[in-house]
Image (cartoon, rainbow, N blue to C red; front, top):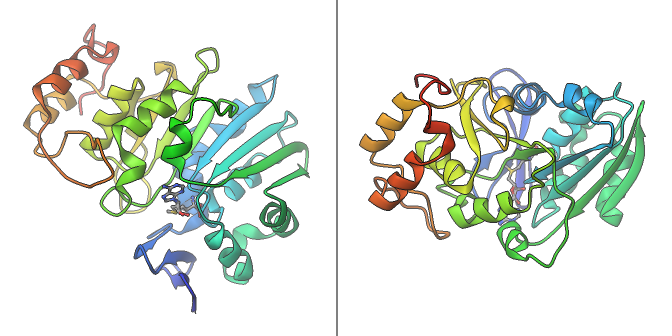
Length: 291
Ligand SMILES: C[S@@+](CC[C@H](N)C(=O)[O-])C[C@H]1O[C@@H](n2cnc3c(N)ncnc32)[C@H](O)[C@@H]1O
């Protein structure tokens, strides 16, 4: 089933996912949109539980809105939370969201949220009651790395980030060290924040550490036996990377962070190795896990 830049693909388990024909990537391959969003983001970031504990409201950043499977799965899982939720979605196109809504018969995660999504498409923001939970959802357009580099723009800092760009090989601009440094600088030190993403690559994990995050092995999803969980507070990460992972980094041929929007692989430079080894995560010996 095709429609201009996007198409729907049927996965082996019978669920459907949106695919970009231009980038040639399926948004939620293997297990499908809801299952991936639930295990990778809802459960791993402990969202309903953390939202329920956030007395002053909770801010969620959704990087790569796409066709909104991640946000809508989070919303479905947090309906019983009574505290307010503010969702800030980022994407430089609303094309996949429009496509997804037009094909919602095959994408059941839209069910019950069609009116809210239509208003988001029409007005760029929507306020609604997600059962018990008051929600303000806004989408910020434009190039995400450029937006993060604009320090005059105030965007409310998040308590959690769903990071779901296309893969580094196809979408290098979304995975560079300067981007994650800029993103990290926008976080509020007094609001603990965690970030999950599907990649488990050494390059990405080094990038997140050098940007200032604590980083751990994330849970499996689909055929990926591991993902990545980062946070400003190590207590939000059950399985921190440790000394053995650091040893593997030293041997890796693909550990150097991307500095520009061009995908390339290389071993870690001496300068970055020293910076990595000085990260508090690798001091003291007992914090990290073995891989
Ligand atoms: C894998 S899709 C996201 C899927 C989405 N999270 C969902 O649940 O349906 C990646 C998204 O990142 C967006 N994106 C890629 N590069 C971007 C950039 N430089 N700035 C803003 N958005 C970008 C794409 O337009 C695309 O919608």
